[in-house]
Length: 102
Image (cartoon, rainbow, N blue to C red):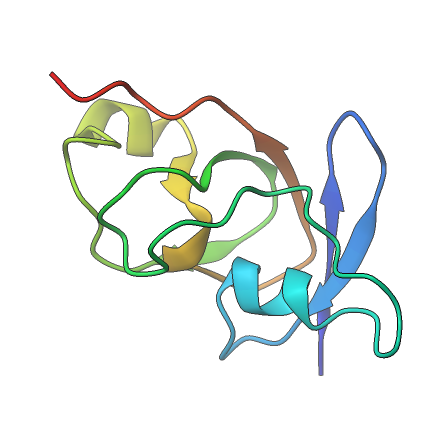
């Protein structure tokens, strides 16, 4: 079973299984076609902040990520790193700029 992930602004969509983080779903969405690159890809481990998104709607689970890139308050507002987000329903996601390191 895959959930539908829609990118706010562009309307692009891809499927993502509950055991895949959003970057895995995005990159495997079209066999034989160019990779969808709507969400920037960095370290894939929650440390670099490149794949910062805001979940506009839908249910998800977010694994541990660097507080340097997503604060507790921001996470409460739906901000997360796509490499640490696992869908639990269809999602609408907005790509947002990564924080600059201090």
